Amino acid sequence: MSLGAIILTGGRSTRMGVDKANLVWGGRPAVERLAEAAREAGATVVLTVGGGDHGLPSTPDPAPGLGPAAGVAAGARALAARGVARMLVLAVDAPTLSATDLAPLVSAPPPGAAYEGLHLPFVADLGALPSGGEAGGALGRLLDRAGLRRLPAPEAAALRLRGANTPEERAALEAELQARGRSWPAR
Image (tube, rainbow, N blue to C red; front, side, top):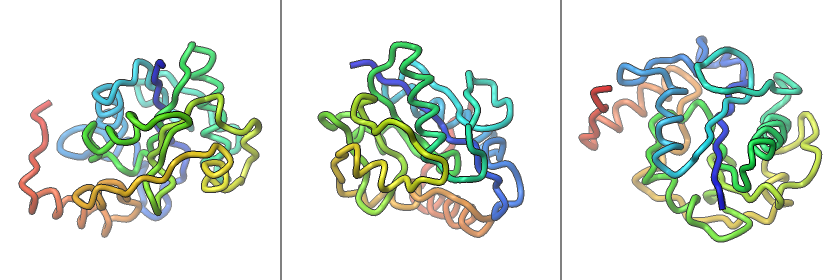
């Protein structure tokens, strides 16, 4: 089953104070890092959903500022139009995720999976997603209605999975990466 990925970039980044998609992590923009992780996890198509030009194919967020559920629905439609049957959904605020962090989700049987206690990232078969994706709808409800399995989150990936929405969270994530000896690729 073909896998596509969307990176949700439609938030206002008010808590971070700058556009999280273009925030540089280890010398590269967040959106670029996530696109690479998605491709390494097996995505053949990677799109952004939301505003701004991030150097990738994109689709607009039909309801900016009202939460990610409508963005997920728009991304699913865009991927379906490209012949994709399964979707990996990533939040732009988690740019240190790796293909290893995503592997349990990608390899989950239909209809897909998310980690316990987190709504993002997740993998879902497009046919399992409820139609609509109403603006302001709860992402957790969308995942429940799709019947996604909840997998235990890898303990070593906890901070990477939660990402960074504030400068303080960014500092903590960077400190965690340093403490674990994870170095940034030279690219």
